[in-house]
Image (spheres, helix red, strand yellow):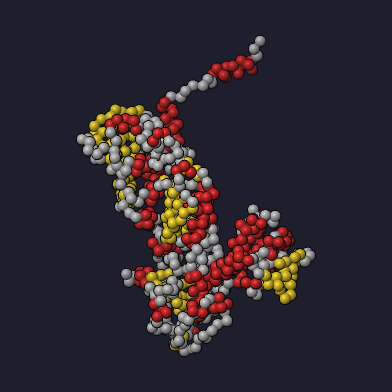
Length: 625
């Protein structure tokens, strides 16, 4: 006897037999994977144009691409027979002998045009070279209209209208025309950077946004990333085994709040790859402020059998057979490229948005200081001078100085009415010091008519940081026993954290032990830091270790992971402070050290240590240009 529950199960099974979906439904499902928004349509059409050998591509977008997308190229075109197959699923001319390993074209799946035709109104007009006429074909919601003759130039013109008209639910999920256009523009920009040998023109609602001629790689990058100056780009050209990395990276001063300024190209294919993004972030970690992202345009060449581009229908994701090798190449290349002295790569104030577009200045009475001669010392006992080669310290002035008492004590300046050969010496990228402002900033001029301003504390912090790091990596930081061990009171959490890392801190020259209660005994400190107060240093180190959730006393690598941050804290306590008056030889010694120290363009926290204005830049401020 069959029970009621069994009858329900039998009825359920009979009601849900497996059946094959209709061709129309299959196309709509495929379209949902390939065509997510107008930008995806633009990507597929432009990639087809590039694969056709075009060197001129024009893109028209109406209402952000929601209403109309038109892509015109001068490529090889298609015959009438090819045109009829182009709109069929999995028909392609790009995949040779069904080889999914050695893929050298941007497209290869044969899904784009059928998917577009299933979700929108599609029309293609194409003409091959030496043909007497062009041919056109149309698809609306998956329904194909016959091929017919048409007028058209050599190449292909594709028009897509009313995207997702066949799937109204998907159309409701589209953003505003402004947002959709920005996505399309970003996609076109990445493709344009990947192929500078092709001319690109983007038109929005009959307004030309950009029209790029055939350019060099650097010219194309500067045209697309138009807020970067040529002198702020660093060329990259490195190899590791069979991998090759070229392109340009921006100076650490050129950064953004998002990763939109990062263009990554693998085998001529623009991608958004998490492995490469992580490597870029790590490569800039020592020179960039937290929350900021660098600007790069990197081109990676990988053997075809070590790369899988058939991960997703959108073809923006990759899989590397050796991710560790790719990561090591990117991190090492970026760090080596950034490891140069200050002054070699331009840091312009406009890149940091420090010059307001509109400002008002109040005119006040100006009193000019009287000249009061005074002699300058020829030697200094400053550690800055001791650390610099003697030949770098001979840039001194023989004249007296101007007194700044009539205009306050914010400016210390040195008189040198006629610039001598020191000022014309082009071997000094940061120039020669002429003044100190607010006892914090050093003013210098170069032989190329440039004005340089240096943050003395930030600059010296980086110098000390690099010395500490070098000493640590080469031989361990030497400790200096205190004449009298110092007892310091700290919070329970700080004491416990420092004692947990006691052995590791000894490698940094810090020896301490528990002293009972809320006290800790400090026996030695790093020799390089000289005479400093132990308590502020230990508080900072404890906070640095507590902030790292991955740091564990049993794992020495976890401390090394935060090594730079810890050394940066230590360096900060030994650096020349803001508010300290520097002598002229001290200032010049600091400039010369900055020019020779890697990563001296930023402090240990990623902030710029120097800025530069050319004579033209200053003239613009006074409306003289």
